[in-house]
Image 1 (cartoon, rainbow, N blue to C red):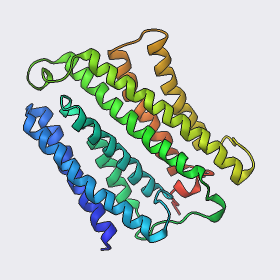
Image 2 (image 1 turned 180 degrees about the vertical axis):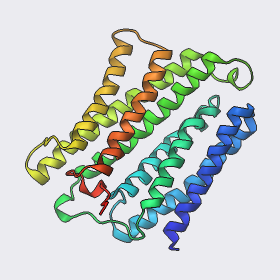
Image 3 (image 1 turned 30 degrees about the vertical axis):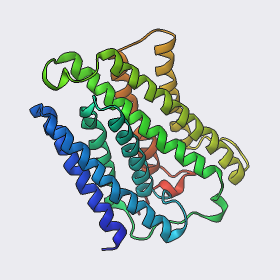
Image 4 (image 1 turned 90 degrees about the vertical axis):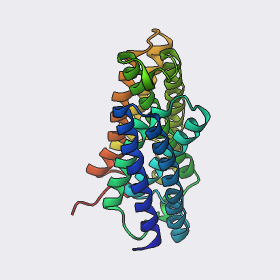
Length: 275
């Protein structure tokens, strides 16, 4: 097995340990398991970074061209933001109960379709806009994933009391954190769409082509815009927005990885060849 793949599966294994620690921590209501989960995620992040670095050095291009690399990079950003938030806000240790399992599943999926040799990008597609585009996409995904995790904790704390739930911030604080991450994700998705338009214009001579990925990305962005509108204009708070954040996350994942998986698009590098 090549070193990059060895480090990759090491990261997946550690994220698996973290996943089960968080899940059983919630079931058993044991803070120690959350600590194990957090530090397992931190340890998994190290070989995760090494994997990306090795595949990057192999081609000289940031590895996000095919769908497995996109999944790996999106998961990397999610874990990075999750860890920063966890170590700066230690009162929300159970947050990993949604974030880490999603990362574990996405990384496992990436591993089943990953090629040993990193993909390369065609010269015609090379542009400075691609950097802005991919950073916006991955940071946006990470932000809304954390927001959905906070939404799940809001719903759990609202229904249950005592033990680990007493150690969480009050519902209004959790709701505010979720709102801030949604706002951040909305901004980053907007950056992704705008940079993608400029990138498309350089490559195809048009800013918008109604490509399925473009359309679904716009739908996802508008969904989070509606979230912000409901909160700021109509004063929605709490339970309704917590559910909204969870449902919107599913739509976002489908639009970001599900559509390129199944449909021939301009984003052909992100599509799996089923033949």
